[in-house]
Amino acid sequence: MKKFMILALALVATFMFVVPAMAVDVEFSGYYRVRGWYESQVELDDDNSESDAVFDHRFRIVPVFKITDNIKLTTKFEAQDNAKWGDNTDSSYGEDIGLERVYADINMDVVSLRIGRMAAGACGISYCNSEVDAERIKLILNDIDPFYLDFTYTKAVEDDYYNDTSDQDSDKYHLHGFYTSETMRAGLLFGFINDKTNSDDVAASTVYKWNSTGTAAVVDTDASVSASEGYDSQYWHINPYIEGKAGPISYLAEMEWKVGDYVDGVANDGVSPDDDRDYDAKRWIIEGAFDAGVATFGAGWAHSDGQDYDESDYTRADGGGGDWEPFLILTHTSANTDLGGFTNVNSYNNDEEFSDGTTTWTVGDLGLDIYYINASFVPMDKLTLGAALGFAYADTTDITQTAANADLDDELGWEFDLTAKYQVMDNLTYDVGFGYFDAGDFYDDIGTALGTGDLDESTWCVINTLMVTF
Image 1: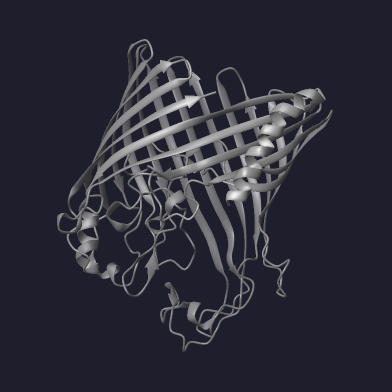
Image 2 (image 1 turned 60 degrees about the vertical axis):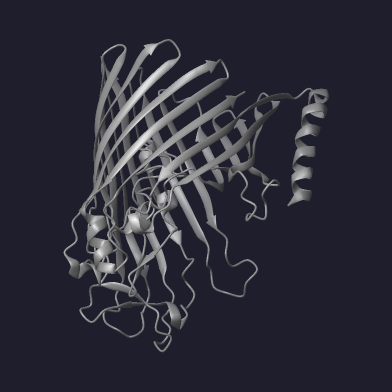
């Protein structure tokens, strides 16, 4: 890692000094961010709770090389990406630097070609977005204003090139178009996902099995159960969105729907039923705001389908996207991500798991409904104040065999935030925020049902950020 860091820095330095001599225009942009936060009893349990205070930082630089009028090369380097200060348990601490993106834009008059590793988790409104990178080929139709149209191929997973296995890749094909005017943008992302990463036979210890009623899908970890056949996931991705203004009123709306075959061709382990399992997951957001001059007032509703295990279809929609952070506790993707032991409601952090001894699951299985109001106020030049209040509910509480018998409440809780942003200098900003979350009855019920204690306490946090941009 240290050798790679030295090589990467040397590469950037070489470009800075050598490229100008090659008559190539180079533009650099990026930022350095230092962030600190304090969070109190995120576990929501006085008997098993600790406060945390931590700093992290990130350095990002985006060199763009204009080779000719029709060819451009974009790169992105990141160092210490959200690295916690003093985290010596991380083997890359102090050496973390990497080339995150590199892609070429080639203008060929009628169409433009973008090829390489680029942003791959963003479209439309931020609610369904998560900042990820992937290798892609994008074909963009030129000069059709006020319309835009592109076709994108994404290699999501390459998993069989070096292995003597069947096709286990995951490929995505998307068509994206939108219309823009002075006051509105409306678009549609339409795609097909061909996921064969589970096409090989599944080991006996991870058999995918239906229960005796033929409806509830669980993971059977009994090694004595025979292995099952592999399966493919082939489904459609439909994502319409709109945002705009009408006088002092602004609005936005977005829906994401994944529909198709989630389990296609699997014979399970001989337990009925042997037919396919469908994919039918939706999430959406609706938001409006009124601009009163020095102040703006808004309200919204965000929904995500949960996985009800009385349903044979796969209905989990993964909560909100990782780029959607309207609240400092419920939706923050760096701090407070283990709220009550379940992570927060953003899909970006749903890699953590919770087990009731029978089934392992994540917070994304719950789905969500969040109703919120917010306001911003500019009392003086360079200073913006904000406030937000939201109430969150689980879309489903029938998530595990054990917990399903506990008559769980769907109230996740409510949160109130206060924020302030000050433009210290042209390239220097300081943000500070205070968040308070009051846990709902769901946490108390699930803690009692699973024997993990009474999860009924409130939590609060303070987050502040200093950012230098260039």
